[in-house]
Image (cartoon, rainbow, N blue to C red):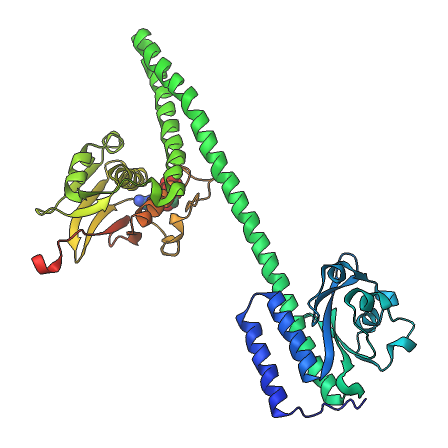
Length: 418
Ligand code: ADP
């Protein structure tokens, strides 16, 4: 056979280009391979065509598709590499043309018997992966009318084999990716379940501790008060951590768990009495709240809004010095209601402004950090705000510290009624 690349006619070229286009548009390997098979038979004027793929584990070939619709018996049939024509094409990694298979000792009659077809001649080419290793074989069988396959047929089949090789590789990578993704999801679910169970199980013994410590503190003499207060403080802190973990449940339950109502954000903030927040008072910090005169109606789950605002305030208190100042402002911003909370604390490096909203993420390394917490508060706040269709983000404050802003869509009367 002449090894110089022959010119293919325009129609063949157009059909090959069309198949590559299909390759880019589909992730359905079976569909694509069937298409390649039917084009291979049609363009080379063969009675049939087939694709055999190498199983990397068993190192045997299997029929993946053929123009006779691979019957299950054929798909299950393993074709060994050392006693078949397809095996020879693959192991020698070169095209072969067998004009009369009956004279070839490698010819395996079983295949013909299984699909009731009589093979006379085979033109076969290896398919390659991107590393140029052979991964399968594309064969055209019996030139129609009994003639010989041409150099153009060989060239056409080679191009189709290249396309099929890429498709097989693409499907393998796609499968691997899907599998990795499924494993990640499973791990994520295990982690979520673990957190839910652990936090739930921790809550009951902790309530017992809190109850008994409060009781013993009152019963014991004043000389023991300081010691009991320490235990009490630690238990209260533990309760806050557990509450964070429990709040993850709401997030994972999604919008279904939200009981949304029309709520005035201004009254909601007013009722939370943030100026008197115990933790801020304990650090001698001032919390200054500025509210607008008008109502700002938003469609929210009130309890969830309190969790979100509580988490932002906790952080502002935690990351600001003793005697610090926290400024809270609720305002209308176009068609949105904004809740802003600004502190004069340690601030956030600019390149971490997005990352701090990821679960368990903390700016300081968890092993060297001075502040308590698990890195859940902000991720819960963000996920809950997003469940409400809103946005939350952090900004670096002009002077010192950081600012967090929540934006929620306002429930406005229809414009015609204004
Ligand atoms: P936690 O506070 O439990 O560590 P969060 O998810 O609430 O977890 O916050 C994640 C990280 O974001 C914190 O560890 C901290 O590094 C940073 N951060 C959050 N709020 C502030 C703030 N107001 N000022 C400075 N850093 C903050």
